[in-house]
Image (cartoon, rainbow, N blue to C red; front, top):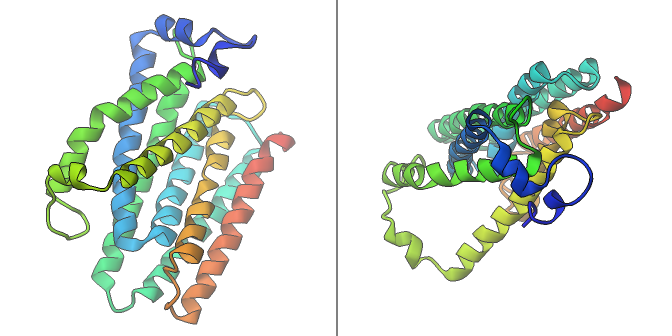
Length: 278
């Protein structure tokens, strides 16, 4: 939908379908690989949310992804003030540490579960930080694609690996529960699938605009990717204020959680203004 509308009008670059047809195999593979890596990371993130909750899995997993993705993207395309960019990343790293401490205090009686939730979040973040450089490289050089065409190949990569990886995690659940069969999908309420599709549409729209922003000469991939991780704060807010995941946590844990919000916002602010002070 976005490719046939916004991606087919304007004066910059080729139209969407012309871009899709002109791409070479190497650049198409990079975008597809980026989608596959993202999908595995996302499934692990869902497992981490099941084990540790939104308020922990997102800041730890996506915070690590921000660091890896921003650094690697900056190496490939150095744009923006490096001191402000990496200073912001340092604040994010401190926010991850504060969040992990808050979670540990909350789960003081369940140390094994605590370790599992944090470990899964870290693995998810490691993979999540690796996908963006693939997509960024697919939009660079001769035979490359534009952001809308790159998004199409990216989504194909997600779709190709979704079923086998889902089946594997259903057979060997990471949350310690009993394995589930594929017929559980069709047995679920229809409205649950609708909300899943709505969430996918919202995420895909944000991802496409993020890819478009990364090709802007002022912003660049590193800053574009880093600002996109501001979604972490929204997810943490859902976990804390909507799902009340820390309602019964000790006061000290809530203090570390508040510190996490402050540090994360400071880090994202520095990253966001980095292109203004090149």
